[in-house]
Length: 309
Image (cartoon, rainbow, N blue to C red; front, side, top):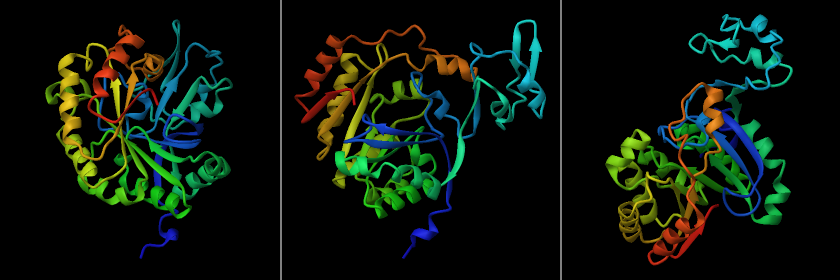
């Protein structure tokens, strides 16, 4: 039998730990964001989560032009030009030294390696709030199954402490990963982006065949699942898209809850800070009436439909 001591020093890369979260499952929770995602969703509001490696986010709007980062950079990736400080990302090794010397945090290294023991210390600091609110810990991303051994170790440690555990997943991982973590997961928050396979590949970069297969298998096992569907105008909100979703719901036997998540452009600035283009810059968030119409249609096919959460 595996001992807890065998898991404590397993390491993984995370990019945030959010305490007092109330949107990632029941009660007050701590959400651990694991870095790396196999999907490249055009609307992703956490683009810093996609790369499995550390990277630098830059805020030129608050930079003091003090030059401390230029002197500190060990590879000469930062240059002072007539247009301001320029970071040559092709040279940058994301060591984070420039962030350490920046007096106003205009430079932030995204991604830090932590042991299971270190993560659990932060999670358990708020245990009293979990006990009082029926909360727990949520492992999100990125895609937490992208680091399967780390996720398994974290779930094992959390369950050893008697915590309610949630895995927030896009579903894109080998079935063996889900088979291994399912007994340790109190509930899955399972994202369905687009049901149509060609549209899914066009907008996320991957097929949804593995995703839908994993969903079907978890449902057949009776796992607690909350489906989450981002509503992206012009991408997955057509009558055909909703019809495809209804057909999927009709094939599930135990999944009773669906959350509709209206698109928002709140992550657009992050793309600029990462030096990337945001291709949905002009997209307009759906109005409440449109979301409510979709919700009403779906309530005929699944027991619970929520907007948000």
